[in-house]
Length: 270
Length: 354
Figure (tube, rainbow over the protein chains, first blue to last red):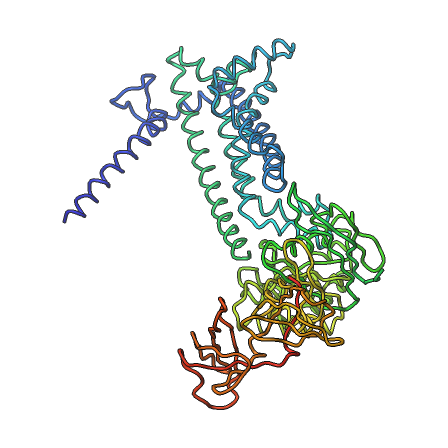
């Protein structure tokens, strides 16, 4: 009796927690179909005109395009750099490897606002004009540690002698990377790409300082909050992004599961 | 200088301040089954990895078939390796695992298929080509690792404790199979193991290693019957040590006083007064209820089927003498506490220098 009572309490707690987490997010799609400029109950009937307005808003789509570009380049660059670092740190005796790992992780612990201002000062001193490229550079700084962490755990997870076996069978280091390391690290690489893309996509502070005259989506949305009549279109866009994120998470989990199975195989093989 | 097919010439390897391999000097003949035997951390795996090219010697050179390979990267060496973990590629099936090195060699498709099929037949895994690594048993994975290395037709095959992960029965079967395979392909094998029985059963010659040094290189019988130092005698099989001192010489031989073990006639060139380390294998000592060289009492008795094992306390000697008796005749054996006599022939006494 007592046990089931406690189970019921825990269930309530879990439900409350999940509600707190997801109900506010669900307001986004809900109000994006509400036929009123005001974000308030009661609802005023169903409409898709906010979606139409969003699609007609060139500036918003331009900002979305910027964010996608910045996110894609950041994800690629930081995953490549992260893979090189992870390979070096897990496969070779790197002198001062732990310190190196600590230093590359430091941007995670520096407040983004401090990072944004210091980068702005640095780039100004160096005479580099602000653009989307400077945003990419700033985002790479905070994304590389994520990439290294994800990829190191993947590379640590499989038997080092697999790569030695490839070398032993006559392949060069480079071909060994493509024929053994890359396929085995692939689930980690996909996770890293998704994670760094998402970190870049919704990053605001650094982008705000380094974007110059361009705007990424978070900057654009921040600017729109001053105009109440534009808010529903932002909600419509938000709802679509939510849908896309959900799809990405499902894909990422799916890939990770394949990875886990593969990892188990590698262990069984060991 | 001895010209071996695989020649390891005064090779040392240091990691920081630690000497993992200390002046190893070996000449291994073509087609020989050669084992590196020693406890873990003795440097045997490091030596093997230097032959494979995964580590480079701090000093010394390595030659295969007359060519110096000391500084060659692993992919250019004429050796292949069977890894302790087997290192079967988990993302490839059995066929692609075995074909891995051949694809690099740019063979014709039909030739590649033929060679992989032949390898599968050799390891008795015909029809297993499409299986994945996780669908194989430990013994099958071990065979695939072997086939993957042998299909490259290496000049030297390196094996890093390849039987260690198998259960006892399978391990013994694989020992025989591996030995037969080696004889039929005629490839030089360098086999690393910490299991002395395995090394004795399979090898033409064995190098016993300890603390980075090669202590003795010999065939199984010689290692057991004539170890050259205390460590080898102790590592290979069981043995009883006792101290002796040369009393007087009689031509080629000498009489040694072995304290509680009485006097022993030995063949040794040492002058009177020289201290010696003497040793006797447990099965070289006969046990009798009536007469013998030394008396003692049974402190422990174990019946092990084909033989029995006894510990005998000998007066004014600290360590008990360990004795193995073949149970050739049906008898009750000796019970704990029983007074017994020990006897042995002078020839059986090993003379070591501590």
